[in-house]
Image (tube, rainbow, N blue to C red; front, side):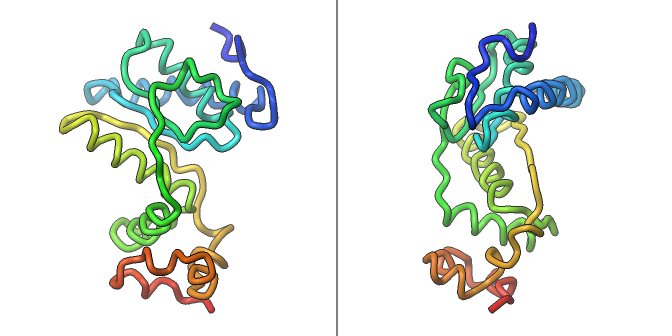
Length: 172
């Protein structure tokens, strides 16, 4: 199947991104097949290209089995999506700090959102399920805000960071 068949064109879904990320699908499928298969895929909508490209492949090879979840944009081909999981800014910010502290991973808020959504999907699906998400970027482009106590306070987000993790909000 051509990954651009029935593609919804628009500012949220670029054909080139769909074609490139369609090729990510086989990599995910092959790696998860080695450990028993894939039960769920969760991805932030963003421009829609990554979600659309990866999902087209995964839905194709799994005969539509498994769950695909995102934070829906109206322009996305909703026939590919099984569910949407809401993740608040507060949950994403907390996960940025948790991943840095607990795993040593320097995530952007959007990548942290994917982690939160994957955790929520895992809670919904139950034990023993294999769920994949994508960590698209690091916090390096956003560090002046993500780790700024004053910026976080101005957005009412500083209070969502657990006390033990506030040590990372070191910028003024």
